[in-house]
Structure formats: structure tokens, C-alpha cells
Amino acid sequence: MALVVICGQPCSGKSRAAGCLAEALQETESKPSVRIINESSFHLDRNQSYADMIAEKNLRGVLRSEVDRSLSRDDIVIVDSLNSIKGYRYELWCLARAAGIRYCVLHCDVEEAYCRKWNEERREKLESAYDDKIIEDLLRRFERPDSRNRWDSPLFEFWPSRDGIEKSSAAIVDAIMYLTKKVDSKTRDVKVLQPTLATQNARITEATSLYEMDRATQEVINMIVEAQSQAMGGPLSGVSLGPGLPTIDISRPVSLPELRRLRRTFIKLTGQSSLSGPPPPSDADSAKRMFVDYLNRELGNG
Image 1 (tube, rainbow, N blue to C red):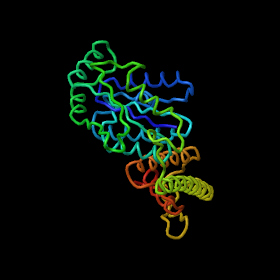
Image 2 (tube, helix red, strand yellow; image 1 turned 180 degrees about the vertical axis):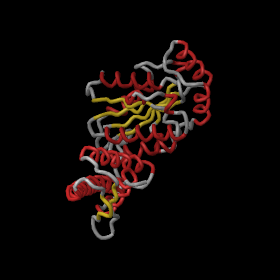
Image 3 (cartoon, rainbow, N blue to C red; image 1 turned 60 degrees about the vertical axis):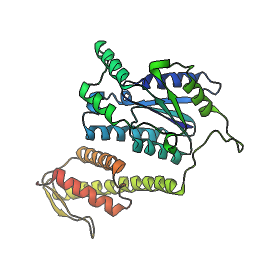
Image 4 (tube, helix red, strand yellow; image 1 turned 135 degrees about the vertical axis):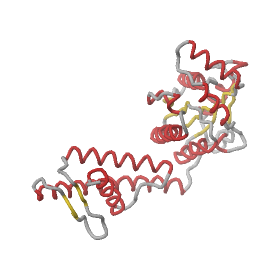
């Protein structure tokens, strides 16, 4: 139904804004299903998640993947995180467009001095707080939303240090009207994003890739099990899977549970790398080559 991106500097009131919006939506006549996705959903420590660029990139990948899985025509998904990089907000907007749903951004606009003050108050209360070095880095790199950008529009803004954040806040009232208003051919003030042919084809390609990888890796497992039974527990050297494919070289017997575990890990790693790189292989032979190379590295003679 909709994707809501909460945006703001660290310790600017984003989680309170997300909570107030979710509660207010539940009090509307339509009572939509609402889900908040944030670091707490995955029990992630904020200092570890923003310790360096690699950890931060991994965090964005985890959140983006969960958003992608959660979007539907029936639910409202609220992303409660910094969402401070405009390129990342664009990626989230693309997910909403591919799903054919509404999209909006809620910005908690707070002076940096208040962010530091509220972070220190959390630390004094023994609540989750940012380390000084990390919060300064995040404050410095924050990229403000701009309603002229399609991925920052429509933009609803709070000023928590001045007005606080309540269910009755103007930004929440305006956002609820936008998210729950019935749309027909005459509606002009509510925009439901429409998927393009490219985004639809991308989803079809991704589904095909996952299917081919699942099938191809299972075939490799079956071949290894069969080859091991013929080798009577000895090492496998130069076992061929077919023309153009690498041979399998395994220095020791490998049980079926271990092969299944390695297969799951390989599929997971390949899926994670596709978030920021090329998609998974879309044909069986490519998937087999990658999986055999992975097994040779993990189980071979080194």
C-alpha cells in the first residue's frame, strides 16, 4: 500500500515519529496493517552498525532487502533509520515504484546541538547511544532531503526541538491523509508510483536467477553424493560435471548435511553480493561453475 521513509540526523526523534505515525494509522477508519523496519528489528548495535563504511553498507543492504520483501499492496511499511544518503533514498523509492505503491518521506529537522544533547541524555540514562566519534561523523555526512527530488517527495517535515512529536503533529496528520486517501482517476494530490517495464523485468530476472541457482546447486550436490559413493570414502579428484564446467577436487569425504550447509551459505553470499553488484547467475551452467569453484576453495587441498 505504501512505503514511508523516516529521514533525519542521529538522535533527532525518528523512532518517536515512526511510532506516532504507526499508532495514528491504527486509529484511522481503514486500520491498515503497519510494519516498522529498523536496526532494532535485527537486534543490531548502532555503534557497530556505523563503525565504518563497510558495516554501514551492510546495514543498508540488510534494511533494503527486508523492505523489498515486506512491500505489498496491503501493508504500510515504515523505514525507521537514518536514511541520510540521497542515493539510498533513491533506491528505496525504486523499490516502491517497482511494487506500484505510494511513497513519502518524513524528515525530522533538528539542529545538531540538540542531536548531541539528546544523545548525551540517552547515555546518562544508560540507553542506547552513539559514541561521540560516530555521531559527529554521521552529522557531518547527513544529506538533507529536497522535495524537488522525486525520491524525497512528497516531503513531510517535523521540527522536534521546537514543536515536539505527537500523533497530532501537522506532519503526521498530513502524512496520514496522503497515505489513506482513496484514489481514483480524478485524484491529483496523491501519487501511486507505477512500475516501469525495466523494474518488472528486473524482478522476473531475479526470480529466474534464484530458481536456476537453487536447481543447479542441488544437481551439484547430487553428483557429489553419487561420486563419493563410487569412491568408497576416498577423495574426489577431477570429477567432471559436464563439458565446459570445472572439475570437483575434494580432499576428504563430506557428509550430506555439510554439503547442504555449504549450499545454503553459497546461495546466501551470492544473494548478498547482488545487492551492490551484479545479479545472481541466470543460467544453470554459470551457477554450477560458481558453486563448484566455491566448494573447491572450501573443501579442496588449498
